[in-house]
Image 1 (cartoon, rainbow, N blue to C red):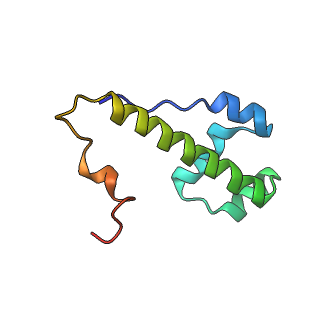
Image 2 (tube, rainbow, N blue to C red):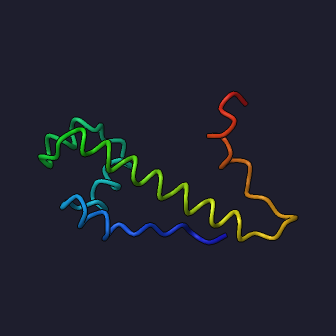
Length: 86
């Protein structure tokens, strides 16, 4: 399965910040308020960046899903967002 590529350079230009650095901080589990204090980015802007990243990831997953042959499906672990009560 291919990895999903999201254009972080475009988001970095849009928000004038280091988006790959923000992604690394979120992956480490750093809370948004701490990131906001360290970087000086408004918390609402941080939430907008996060939602843009989530939307880009969802769109990339949809394109990837539509490119699969009809008999194949994506693995079940990625469908937890659609079925949270499993």
